[in-house]
Length: 61
Figure 1 (cartoon, rainbow, N blue to C red):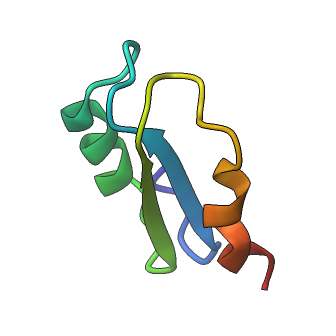
Figure 2: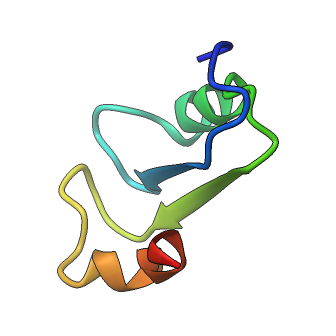
Figure 3: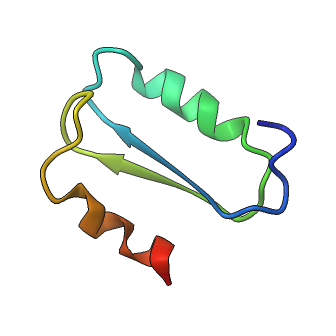
């Protein structure tokens, strides 16, 4: 992830994911080298909630 330096990166995670803790996700986000990054945190478990894509609308702009 250190080689992603000039790309737009959004990390989408859930706050109650049984496969990755909040601490795991925060560490992963910190390892993204890009200055153009955003951590989108969703309510729920490993399967993102219905309509989650609405929170990603800024990605498409």
